[in-house]
Image (cartoon, rainbow, N blue to C red; front, side, top):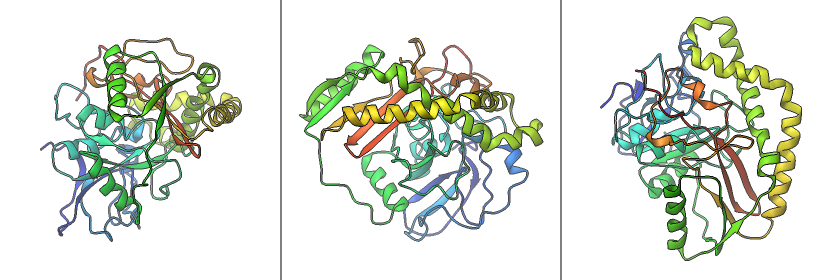
Length: 358
């Protein structure tokens, strides 16, 4: 049991599922630190919980650690320590919802709450051998969450398996139920990827019995770039006051990440226009009743970036943490579960060759 998994441990009584909540999310009576010394020094106890988990019988076991200010994909935190990957302590736990994934993987929690702006409820489970669900933007209200990029911020569950994710969704969304729907035709978007991962995705899709058709999105390179400037500029607006008023309490890597957003602000109008054109292109392509699916790849590049040999789960983090984000882009996930549900999310990756600093 690692002391770096949680920022605050709790011991609530009861028989309900044990819940680890990322310390970006308010829990009534507990200060929210966002994994940041600058925030922790000023934090006061939260007035309300994010959702009715306690009312549903959940036992909150603690506020889980995270990458500082949720500004990175490694889980590196110079103030509260870096949560230990239970599969291999030499590897990063993933970020930014590192502690939530580690708590579930080590059996300290049945369900973890994470937030996801650019992969943060997907990357840590992938690194730690558990499962995460990125929910549709806006489905879970974001009140009571320290913001990173409000245009992308979401809340989702982490669990050991899909059954645990269903349990997590019932805590986040009272009345949640699985839709009695299954696709018959699945569109496969192929990106530059490690051949082993490509083959694993193909094998998983083949095992379903669905009809799988390749999808071509020529707008991927020309329009998909817009997400990164929006994310970066909004992150700067969310946390700039910390950098400006308490620079000694924000790590150099996180400061550098946030200041990149300051530089991106001038591109914001064009980025939003590109994002809207990208959504229209996707809706036009996926307007037929089918499911389009592209998994995050260990070797891939974001729009406008050359392919690189990157292996998210098998690389060590650089000491600066956020410096590995390359402006918030890396691999990208396209997920369309029907003609009415559509999301494009940047997923950051870790550069190879750097050692994890603890």
